[in-house]
Length: 265
View 1 (cartoon, one colour):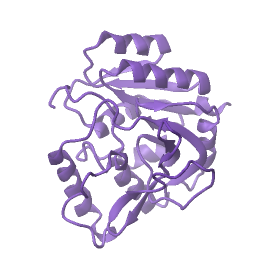
View 2 (cartoon, rainbow, N blue to C red):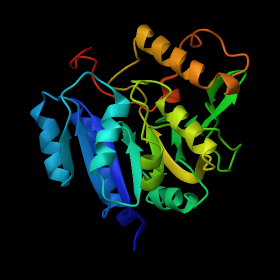
View 3 (cartoon, rainbow, N blue to C red):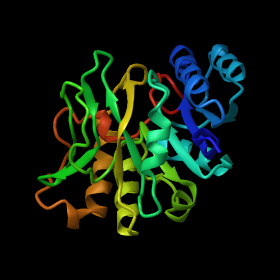
């Protein structure tokens, strides 16, 4: 069985047809047997539906205020494969080895698996997340993209995260009270608590056009998510502050990227 036949890909989106088409074409070329579910959070642009239909993906509609965790959970509930892959709609796939590397890293004692994400210029954007001085911090940011395993992460970003479906279900999915930020870190820490720590597939490389379409979250959303996350994981966040660091990185959260003109925004 090919690796892609074992995977259900969940892509949240809204009114971002060009980037959605790019990631769907990349999946068709590199993971042709994957189950692809696109969770459309109230798109108004008919080109979104055309892109989904052209790719032969399964459309799921959620007309509600943006909540990344909810969108992913809806997709996971409809999935049918051994693994679920959370994937942002602003990911660009240029390497046909990426999914095989992620599946290979997902052993029976492993939790969520991430990939190395790059800026379009090739420099590293993300090699996982570590808890540093009481806060989640992005690993590898700004590196030149050289190969290598790097340090083991405490968590991986939901922009591209592979999880065994049985584990995702056992953990109750993403925490819907964490609407935009830290939901991915929270899932990874819960998985580690269950004996399934996060891992990085160092040979999986993807381009991430971070925040290209949705943009940064509003300060109230960032603060609310941080306060909940900090309260839940206070025992691991010794030295953590009362508010997120200035310019909190969107890469610390696994959110979909799309226009802020959606319902409830």
